[in-house]
Length: 406
Ligand code: 9WN
Image 1 (cartoon, rainbow, N blue to C red):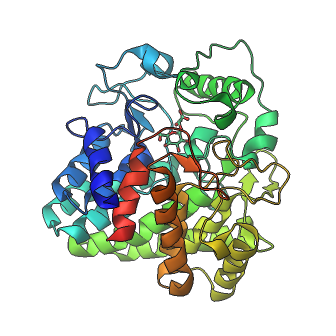
Image 2: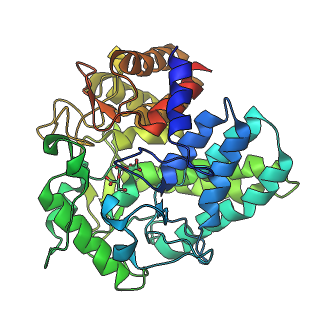
């Protein structure tokens, strides 16, 4: 039943060559959403999964960046803020896109699609694009510490995470041109505040005004983003092998980023973000700090400490991981990335636990299924009551459940 319903959501959100995250709230193609969606679609339509990824990479920029939104030209500008008129940019393909990126989980998605239905021709086609995506990140975003930075909270995928409260406080808002559309669909207490939005717009505008080249006031190294980058290198090694290419450079890059993360982002049982502007660690209680569990090369003692933190502070012992630790003062069980449980975050952590701690991965998978059985394919869930929040029929909630149940 749950599987049939998941496919129904993905079919309803399919736009011919990609899937919208949500018909009304997010009516375009989003970068990391498409990766998660491809992982789910691989279970029932690998052809659709390949199309999803190839459509996204069709809008890749010449510098290798994969934009976080590819706009559907037939959707009116007023349907989503900020739309193409705000970003003022086109990919070489002619598609209107945003100018920022999202966590690079796409190599993993391509690999999972290949495993579902082996297709070396698809891998050969997408491999150079995945490599260019990584090259953009190390060319444009790598710090002296060897870590990759993000220049906007939207790049983290966890927009209003309390981890960004301190660096966002330094952002000068200026004249606001915000025309929020999200509140037409979702109650304001489940979304970022107007103050957050004023800062998001100011940061995006400032980055746009440098031709999408120079970071502004917000420049941080995020553990989820860097873990995704490292996992991408591990996965590219596997893809390179299938393509008859040398996997070694990818393996050493993965080892290097893992080492840099352990050296600069780890403290006291959790990975944290680091503010590149101040050089300070942004100690917080974000579940983004658990995602490095995905890195195959993480030292055993750190794995054990992270698992302990997930059990004690994030709800893993009950099989439901919250996006922010409930005991922390900033925790809010319904406000977007400030506490609710999200299927994609749980899935990423589940990937990290499957081989190492199957005893914990099983209950986490059951927790994801429980949330959806209780409330449907909602965008996020109250981690205690499992009540659904945000939009309905949210694509990655449907897609990743297909993978969990497979
Ligand atoms: C801004 C589409 C996206 C997700 C992000 C999530 C949310 C956008 C927004 O929706 O962000 O990119 O308008 O709030 O935070 O992770 O990719 O589902």
